[in-house]
Each structure stands twice: as structure tokens, then as C-alpha cells.
Amino acid sequence: MRRMIIFSFFKKRKVNPKEKLREVLKGYRLPSFPAVITEAMEKIRDPNSSASDIARIIALDPGISVRVLSMANSAAFSPTKQVENLNQAVALIGLAQMETLLLSAVVSVAAPRKAANGYVPPRFWLAAARRGILARTLGPAVRRVLSYSAQESEVFTAGFLQDMAIPFLAQAMPEDYGKILDRWHAEGGRLDILEREAFDWDHAEVATWICHHWRLPENIASAIGGHHDPQNKLYSCPPPVALVSLLREEPELAGLEDLQDLVVVKLGISQDMAIDLVKSGLDKASDLARLIV
Image (cartoon, rainbow, N blue to C red):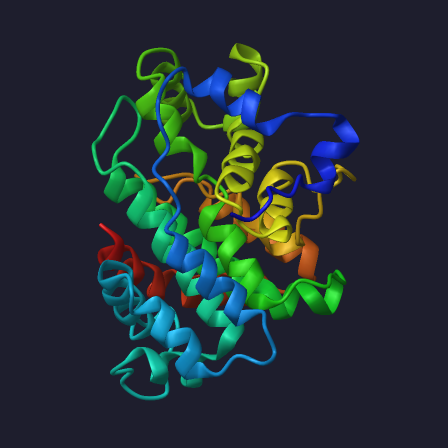
């Protein structure tokens, strides 16, 4: 069994993520992260691994395999041709994109499918797909203005999963947390501020504890942890991931105009260019969201 590695930002704050997660979830048990997917991700990072090595491991989990192939063929990943098997998926979309697919597929499968107060799965995953795709779409333009080191696949994953704690919190605390979600949907504003007013944590911090519990990559956990506060030196959040955090869930693409205005200011482009850039990302999100729910 692999030894649990404590993320560096937990060490700096002397935080025990396991204890914190237990306190917040109050007996709610997180599903296990599939061992075969953890092994596949390790193979992806091994320069001596071949596409067939990686595909063979992923194939051991039929449910995830089907989800990965469906996502690989979606407009979100713009395949150059139909992806018919896992070997092709690895070869055509590349190792970085394959890790993105695996993380996104596994977390979306593990998240609760049951609605709760303030949590409606189709609405939640549509917003997640929009954030992920828009973060990746905006990435090249943002990089020209604001330097950062993260790859575009990492930007997609962190954008897509930045609110990953919400479904679990909604199930674990249906009354107390549900009231916060309902208020956020009705009034807008920043969810993390509403959470801090009611609790001593927010969904971004809880997500880092979940990432640690599932042994997800530290760079993804760090990007998620800082998406509402990119100036926080404890974390390292790529600018596109912080930008898309302005997008709330449906209805009416809440936060879209704020995002477009911020893109204009940050990138120094026209309003029309910002609208076109954002629209190109949104057009792909619905297709991806349909595959998840």
C-alpha cells in the first residue's frame, strides 16, 4: 500500500486533512478512488510506459473505460478522428489529456447522483463543464498577458473540478449547507464568503482535503484550493482557473457578463472578441455535460 503523502501547503499550515474532512462530513463516507485508476495515472507519468500499458490498466475498470471513450469523442476534446478504443485515446489525445480525462471521469462518477437542497446534478455538472472548457479556451490568451507554468490540461481539470466538494457537502449537511447553496443561487455573490460566514471552511478548502484523501495530484489540489483567492501564496492557482470561478450555475449563465468584462480588462481585448472567445468554449460544454449526467 502506498504511503500517504501530505501536500506541502498542509505542512505549512500544520493541517491534518484527514481529521478536517472527518469533522466536516460528519459520518458521510466518501466513495473510494479506484485503485486501477491510481495505477493508470502513475503509468501515465512513467516515461517508460507505452500507450498499451496505460490502456490495459484503464480497461480493468469497464465503467470508467466507457466514460473515458465517450468524453474523448466529445467536442470538448476535439478529436481529429473517431476514438474507438483506449489505445487510440492515449495515442490521439496525448498523456496529459488522458490524465485529465481520467480525473474528470472518475470524480464525476464518484460524485453523488442524488439531488439535495441547493444541489441539482445536471445544473452542477453543466457549470463544471463550462468552467473547465472556458479555463482551457482562455488559457492561451491569458498566458500571453499573465505568465503561468500550468499546462492547458491541468487548467481544464482544475476548472472542471474546482467545485467538486459541493455535491458531497450537500449530501453530508443537507440542512445547514443546503441553506447556503440556496442563498447563493438566489442572491449571487461568492459562495466561499457565504460559507466562511457560516463555517470555518469553504468548498475550495474542503476540496483540497478530498484531493488528499483520494491521492490526486498536488498541483490540481493547489489550483482548486486557490481558485477564489489566487493571490494566496499558500496555493498555486493558474489565472484562467480563477477567472472562470466567476461563473455560477444556471439559470441564465449567472456570472457570464462579469467573466466577459474581466476578460476584456485582463487581456486588453475588445468586448466582441471576449464574447466570441467565451462563446467558443460554452458551445462545447453542453456536449460534455450530457455525457456526465
